[in-house]
Image 1 (cartoon, rainbow, N blue to C red):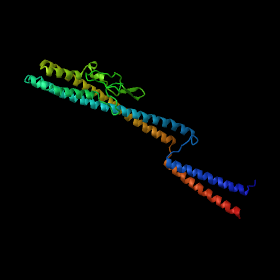
Image 2 (cartoon, rainbow, N blue to C red):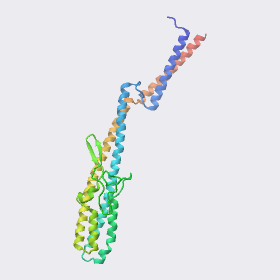
Image 3 (cartoon, one colour):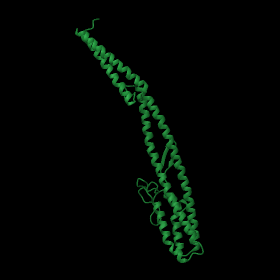
Image 4 (cartoon, rainbow, N blue to C red):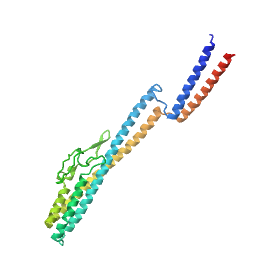
Length: 289
């Protein structure tokens, strides 16, 4: 079979083109770190990569939700701590006022300070989160939970965050836990304390002191629950981060390039291109004679 001069030149040109394409692909693989960029590169590996990539995206989205839930619990704990501090100061003052050596005038003079404590307590109970929503309104985050009289206008809905396939964690404390429905009423306790101080009612002061103590104990218990939930959220985040590492490693194995193999492929492609170019030049030179 006779091969024409044009055919020889064409074969040399095709070989050079293939070598250039292989060099480009090898260089791209080494620089991008990706062995599989499209289904045609490796259908099976590309499909596995798509599944793993989707799971990574889902994990990242879940991480955003986890962080938001944990942030809300941290903000809640800070406000509960603020409330506890106000109740502690209120109990200390109530203890002084219930002392038999205090005069009626001294007790009456303390009512203004007690009213200020009560308003500071209500402000903490009406605190907003970093997004502007009320922390203690349940699901009604756009509704101020407590009015001036201490009436609760939120709901009892617990905001839940899914931590894995079968578990959820509550990331809020509803204001109903801070009212008589929850077994305490710190605002009412301050009201009782202020009224007893104004009326020079020592038995009333002692009764209010007990109410403030019960409210403080309940807040301490609530904070312990919040701390436990924060721990669960932290644990879920750590597990999710570990899973992300495994998924990322699986993705790299499925579609990623091995640096050594990619470098070797690039060296072979360069050598092939040099050979093809030299062959084309030799053919052209021979055929010109």
